[in-house]
Length: 168
Image 1: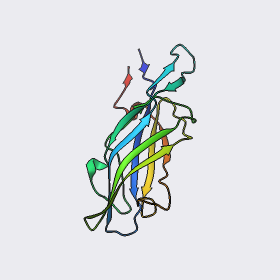
Image 2 (image 1 turned 180 degrees about the horizontal axis):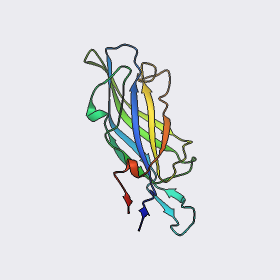
Image 3 (image 1 turned 60 degrees about the horizontal axis):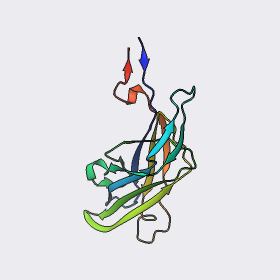
Image 4 (image 1 turned 90 degrees about the vertical axis):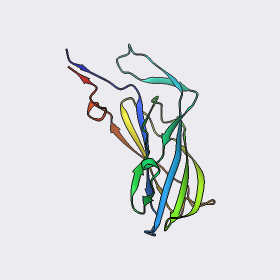
């Protein structure tokens, strides 16, 4: 009997790039938290599985970047944790919060707590979402010139990426 596991949830992670132009600049991103829907409903007897009515909120601990390591200029790193969330329509608003430290030549020059709203992204079952942002001199200060913007890369989440949930 062949059986293929179908994922009903969405997978989320965050990747941050150090966009500072000075090669002596490093960033540390810590305490990344993602607020997503807490509950939802799905009809498992329907031909097309779709989540309905996501409600409430839960804060997911995404961890730190590369175990809290300093990310060099021009490089990027992903959060320690990937988390699962209930799929929701593009009208759903999400929040990501994190602490960012800017170091110059190994010396801490600034630190700040950031809160960013994410909307307009439809979460579908069986998809992996990687939210990517660049941290630089324009968006990290206490009164930044620009907001931090996350772009999203979406991939199909299948048995090759989930440690073999394929049964024969």
